[in-house]
Image (cartoon, rainbow, N blue to C red; front, side, top):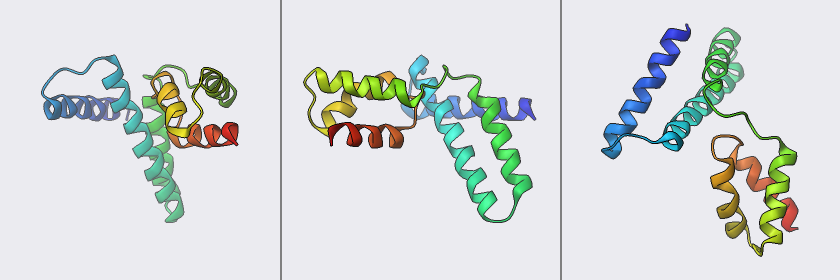
Length: 123
């Protein structure tokens, strides 16, 4: 199974390179890997909701295989610290804070969750 998953992931990277017309750098590859993980987690949720637990487990297992190829995930506390740092640095609006933290958390923390944390800290 791991071979098929990794081959698929390499295909996704190559497709993205063809799409943009150049070789991906590390952050570009990480973005493709993160997208692959997100797609598989979403598929697992859909399969679970659809009463297909065996397919949900397969998708979750594939996401876990791919996760190894990303830098370690950030904790909520670490991202909250980054948000507070950005606010202390003068960012007082959602867009400004997100603009400062996203390059630091991309591929390591879910953007929707980061958005929630920023809203909480700005409130």
